[in-house]
Image (tube, rainbow, N blue to C red; front, side):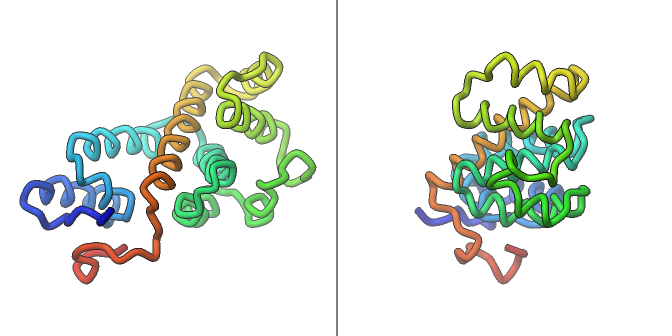
Length: 179
């Protein structure tokens, strides 16, 4: 399916807002612009997750990268790897995400968070010992934000993969905006 044209008069105001808030209309938003109500809600929700939560950026990006790995979502991983590094993760941690259980790259809290992410993503129902470990690692607000982040980025990766979004795709108006 082709990407929506952000210059279309019906989507232009929202596309301009996306550019103000995100710097450009990325492929994800170019597809979402086919439905301005969905794109607008998505933008607001993901802005809250990424910019308004008390959860550390390092933990947020750790689970985003793990979700991308678990769901086979390369676009999500490509977009978030540089952010993860800026937020304090290191390349050896990103490289170890595929087999984090046997890696010594993660501390006890990160391991609890990763186990929780795996359970939420793979089984949906989180075993009590996994929940108890993450509950001990984080205060209530951060646990709620972590849970919302994992859920949100499962939504993102599933949308990306179902719609076949690829960072190498040419976007409408690509000469006018960063891709």
